[in-house]
Length: 102
Image (cartoon, rainbow, N blue to C red; front, side):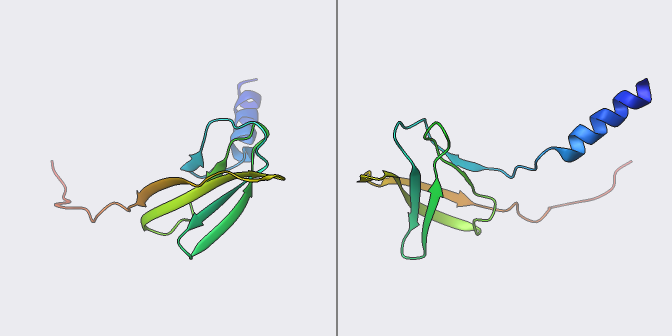
């Protein structure tokens, strides 16, 4: 019985969908069908809203560095005013003073 439980747990863990992190999210917005994300002239992404009108945009592929985005909520009637959002994606620095101790 113990092997069966361990096997079921292993299958559940291995078959679970992989989620990257972090995500750009917002509070639920009634009537929103999609969002437009803009960063200067470099990016103009249209992403569908979640069922409750929120955005859940995976930031895992965003390049390293500082970003200033403008995000608009949209539906068939048009889009909202842009909401600015800034963040910096930084990788950790090199390890300092790495060694073995006894």
